[in-house]
Length: 87
Image (cartoon, rainbow, N blue to C red; front, side, top):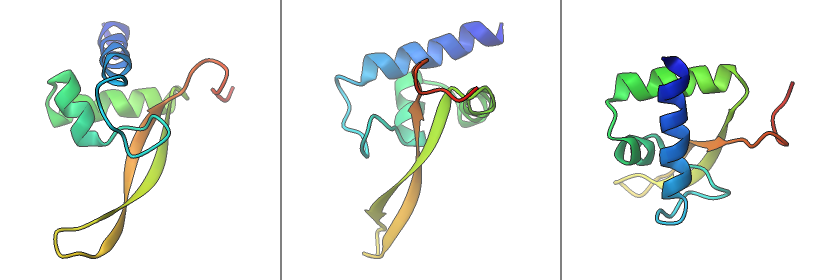
């Protein structure tokens, strides 16, 4: 069952790549992934953790500005293809 839902997450991200602007290099914020999948935060976090543990997702950092104008660094998630995965 886990594989089916992780596959759903991967499919949703791949489908969104053409439609969504990302922080860079094909990475998506947690909120973008939540919107693309329609999943709740707990479910999405659980699957991102599993994909990360399996070496299928990479956490990258991007710079943005907070509401008060301060520059902040936030995480984004990039799915790795088979060639990029670490053993």
